[in-house]
Amino acid sequence: MFRFFALLALATFATAAGAAEKPNIVVILADDLGRADCGFMGGKDIPTPNIDKLAKAGATLDAFYVQPVCSPTRAAFMTGRYPMRHGLQVGVVRPWAQYGLPLEEQTIAQGLKSAGYTTAICGKWHLGHFQPEYLPTKRGFDHQYGHYNGALDYFTHIRDGGFDWHRDDAVCRDEGYSTHLIAKEAAKFVADTAGKSPFFLYVPFNAVHAPLEAPDEYLNRFPNLKNQRKKYAAMLSAMDDGVGTILAALDKAGATSNTLVIFSSDNGGPSPGTVTDNGPYRAGKGTLYEGGVRVAACAAWPGHIPVGTTNREPMHMVDLYPTFLKIAGATVSQKLPLDGLDVGPTLTAGKPSPHESILLNTTPSNGAVRAGDWKLVVKTAADDPDGEGDAGKPLAKPSVELFDLKADPYEKTNLAGKEAEKVAALRKTLDGYAKQAVTPKAKPKAKDFVTPKVWGEKS
Ligand SMILES: [Ca+2]
Image (cartoon, rainbow, N blue to C red; front, top):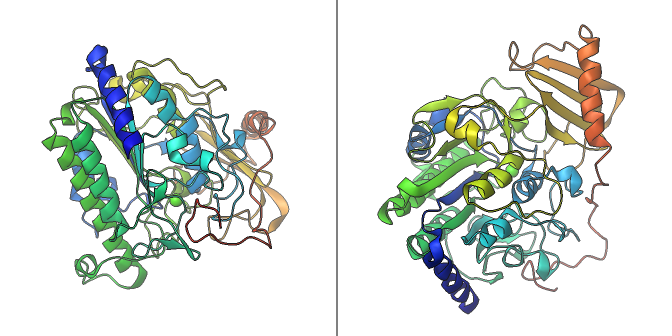
């Protein structure tokens, strides 16, 4: 705690030196949210008034792309680089994983900190906890609150037998529903920091990821829904309340007018049609189809992002790194080459996407790329059935699919047989990326692995 306040004091000094006009940046990341579940994305059965209010205050991002699962999207955000460059392109960082986001990567939090920002993460890290130097407070965050693993119990804060709740990377015994705790801490950070220093607040809720758990008061809000959908709706409603708590804290601190807020999911909804709703978009989490990687997203920044608009330009999570650093007046300090491009003019002035192509992922078993309105999906294995691990079973023969997203956004018609030249061109682009990929780090659990009592600590 002392360390946090000491850093806060330094940041306050930076403000006095002339950083007062820098906008605050808040990123709220939902986990496994269906593309069409929120009202602003067309959802009907789960009211999300707070997230909708944010979208109405700015722009709905219709073609905002992420990775197919949790950890890779977070790696892309933290570094501005595709996770195939980190070896994080396959699966998620499991509780027992002996790896994390490589230490040579300079995170977006480090970049913004160097520009005088006070930085905090409230929520799920999911980028490695096997050694202390991989934890958030060693990766550019002045303040950390929340958990390291995915899929932890919302009430006990336990994952696979290990306790996983932390404050400033030390065990924390706060009791409560994790969505509420995360929102409350994020609001407190806003109240403590606004006006003293520009801040970067990253709020990766574990909601609405499984296990499907919610307090009764939220379940009772959905008498007409049943089974998993009812629980999921309750979880989303709680997260929407959490977003409301954070937006209210910004208002109360007088910070709303000088804060860029981005809301996004980390991947498409799993089990679409049963638990989540990705609308008419094809498939869901763990796949490279639009339902897996083109997510619910919006951005608001008063006076900069046109109010009540829909932005249809393709953007990717990697773009936030250079975009935020530019907004913050920082030079890009990442020593490694970025994949992300500055989408500031796209967000604020409706300029076309700066991308000639967007890599959706490349692994030893599949890959996809979007270039203009065309998209190529190549697979040598079936889609991952649970959406979190490696690929599914090898296919009898590789599949190559080409889609014209302008005419066919729901990827119903494979044009690969008709458009050989287009396939060849996109294949060349995809292969060009694949050649730069490093070996995936994901490995099965070691037989002698002993679960620690507290994740992030030695067993
Ligand atoms: Ca996820």
